[in-house]
Length: 165
Image (cartoon, rainbow, N blue to C red; front, side, top):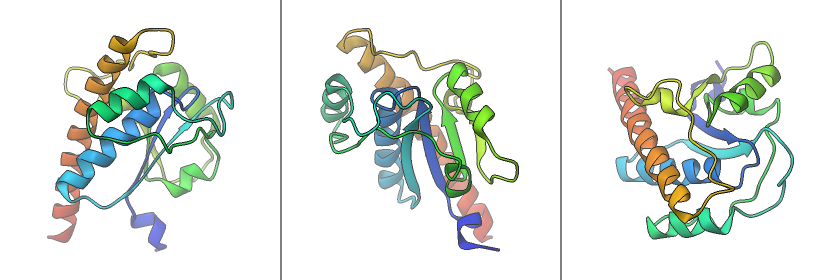
């Protein structure tokens, strides 16, 4: 079995990869670091609107207010290779979930799901796109992605512990 088949890799996907998905990536990185969980983490967009662009300044500001620096992130588009590179791909809403599934190659190793499916009672819910909103909308996104990141990190840590038994 190849090393990548066992390696934990998490990819967060929204539309343009400048708001929700880089925030989710940052929140997950912090939660994983605090829990001592080693994994590859990244974010992408289903559309190519912002390839090479930094995150929205409001996303950077809210993440920084929560001790996370996402300013060096650059927008990129989801690729077919991501389905083998990552073990888990999380969509931030249903439209992007549909876009991810439409791109999903046969035989890709990634498990695809909505991010908020990880949070009990929030299954099927989208993380609202804050792009046309205000800083409060970005703060709400941070709260949601942090909640999901904490749940996922705890789950992945427990899975890793069980695998060692």
